[in-house]
Amino acid sequence: MTKTFLIKAFSCMVMALLIGGSVAIAQNDTAELAKKAQNPIASMISVPFQNNFNFGIGTYDRMQYILNIQPVVPFSLNENWNLITRTIVPVVYQPNPLAEEGSASGLSDIQLNFFFAPAKPGKVIWGAGTVFMLPTGTDQMLTQGKWGLGPSIVVLTSSGHWLVGSLINNIWSVGGKKDRADVNQFMWQYFINYNMPKGWYLTSGPTLTANWKAADGEKWTVPFGAGIGKIFRVGKQPMNGQISAYYNAVKPTGASDWSLRFQLQLLFPK
Image: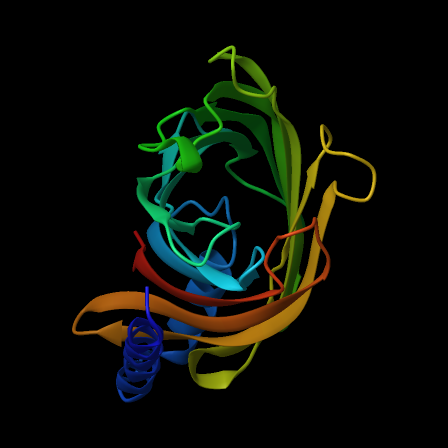
């Protein structure tokens, strides 16, 4: 995970946005796609590839890389209800935080989210359900070694150019390796999007986390930041590209100081 790799990843994202900017999409289709892409429980299949570069890890200010592959697949249960599945598959490069060298790469713990949501939502769109954590990490450094379970809820609303909302869950360990610490972790992602003409939008979507098992002063990670994105097409394929940066105003000892997020999302509207 070198600086050259980071530059190449950034260049690919910028090129994708520039290429997308040259391919026209009808304005009404673009506006609808943008809001669906920004809605975690939209009735639309999508596959985001979220690249996170986390800088300032550990004693030697190393970099952690996380690729979150997050397919969202909706199912119609009946005329009143949908089931939205959201899977998070993290592929991680994890440096040893206590040394200048040494790292682990591979699959981390997968999360499965299931939301029951009204098929015909009103002004306030919501979904509620369950999140599962699977101990799928391929290395001791990449897994918590526990099965996890907890509630999950998402609420959002859209008005004019704006789409705002929150996604909240809490996971408790319910089994797994006895020599690994129990899990009690909280996640809150709020998202604020301002949609502009030609598929462009401003966005802020930081993920706040809390490890309730940690010592006082070491529980919370609280980032602030923002970015820009665009809806475009590559050939006939609608896509959503996004670049943002976040600074961790509150963080545990040794955690990342700041991060860059590059995301490409494949969209499959009906």
